[in-house]
Amino acid sequence: MRVKTNSFQSMFTVDSRGLYCRPGNFYVDPSAPVERAVITHAHSDHARRGHDHVLATAESIAFMQVRLGTAARLGAQALSYGESLRIGEALVRFAPAGHVLGSAQVVIEWGGKRAVVSGDYKRQWDPTVAPFEVVPCDLFVTEATFALPVFRHGNPYGEVGKLLRSVRQFPERTHVIGVYGLGKCQRLIAMLRESGYAEPIFLHGALLSCCEVYERFGVKLGPLLPATGAAREDVKGKIVLAPPSAISDRWSRRFPDALTAFASGWMRVRARARQQGVELPLVISDHADWDELIQTIDETGAPEVWVTHGREEALLYHLHKTGRRGRALALIGREDEDQ
Image 1 (cartoon, rainbow, N blue to C red):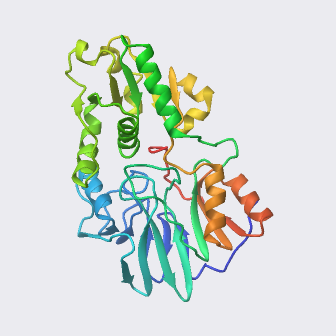
Image 2 (cartoon, helix red, strand yellow):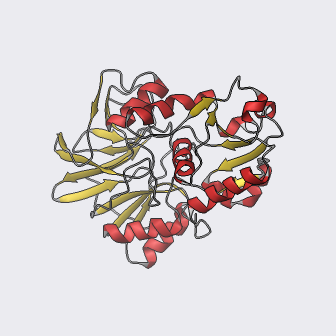
Image 3 (cartoon, rainbow, N blue to C red):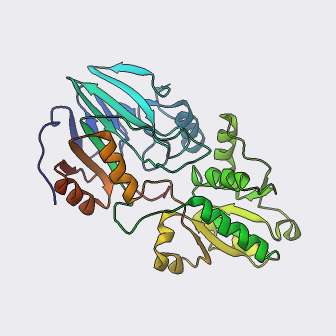
């Protein structure tokens, strides 16, 4: 159900490039090159090449430089959490989103109103990031990746325990785990370390650069080794992390009796795990689940909520039932790189 709303149309418009803030003359996470972009985090469906000017956290700029070659054509400016910057007529600041290192909610104040654009976010504990901060607002623009009541992620440390039990149970097998390269990889490593796993963790080459950025910003990940070229005996009984695409191709078959796993919120859907040939599904997500989405909307106190992408219908129905105004923005170009 969609509820028509006009109260913020003077502040924001939506076009083919995304969400445009009129008083600041900038886009938030535009899907095509623009003159001025404010970036919530460095995943490829939010941070793209070709913008003239970019405003983001220092961590997101570093990831964009590693992943894209450059953060912006003419200049990138870093803004720390809590620091305010006037852009045009709008006052802008960042608040932690808890999604990946450097991820931020964009807080925009103009005309006596406050809007918060969440980007992607999660509420679960993550030792590698600043925890999510609730910002009271008049308009909350939220993601909705897992906005169905079936998605309740549970305790991620229980999933890590399941992985470690499997490693102990099958010491002759190499556990090859699919992880997204920015965020999930480093979070899983950190949780393994917190759970007492001190062995070297082997990494696919595509994961090394983002781990180096985490280390540069003070997130200690412990001993990491390249998986490519490692002797079969060295990885026997060990944990290997790789991009999801690599766990089902011949790259993973070089390891002794590889046991494939995948860390993602989508592993709650068992049929999806079976389709991808995953032996050990690990329900670990870097996005808010249904309960966390509802909790966050309630805690912001926002009477108006816009849904940027994902499973919008159930969330809009809930908003309508609870007396809030809701709108689906139907932004294009959102993939599931980071679920």
